[in-house]
Image (cartoon, rainbow, N blue to C red; front, side):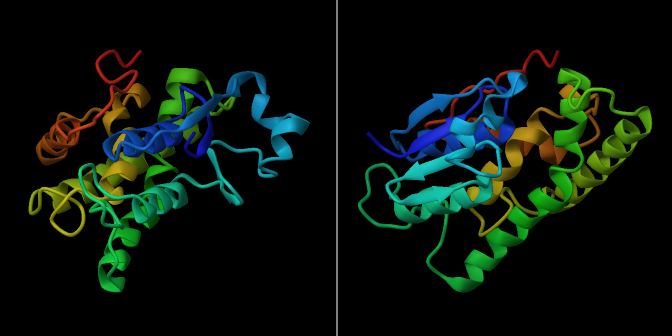
Length: 215
């Protein structure tokens, strides 16, 4: 078996890993946990990942507990399908190119996770429970700001970094695609919508729950 991925179906961060694994034809051993009933906080899972978060990837002695780190690891240690050369084209062996990709991974952490991801969790799953309307409003406003940043970039380039699909696109794709689940419209963002279609056309793409029926 390949690396073991602890995940849950509803998690966008888990989907990122599953998507890249499919694009690179990597066999993952998936262990699905019931996030909404606290399976990620049990003593058994905390012994694996003390942070109590998903996803978590275990590959031999390697443990990675951040989705962006997992994407970099998989793309950096596996070739593209039909090739034997590593890293894959979703990553790079060049420091300057790595920095350009990481710049967008940081955007994912600082903007996307605090906006589009939060709005989706609030609106679609009522998670965390009892979230204030003010928090939802702030998340949506920051989500629109994030989409404006992406629109500006994607009006000039088909992809976020290096002129080709990389882990930057994979990291950001899911919560942008699911923005309507957070009651954030993608209609004003034509370049973003075209980019989403390019990602969906990548060989090995796997379906995303909620994409066509947000609620």
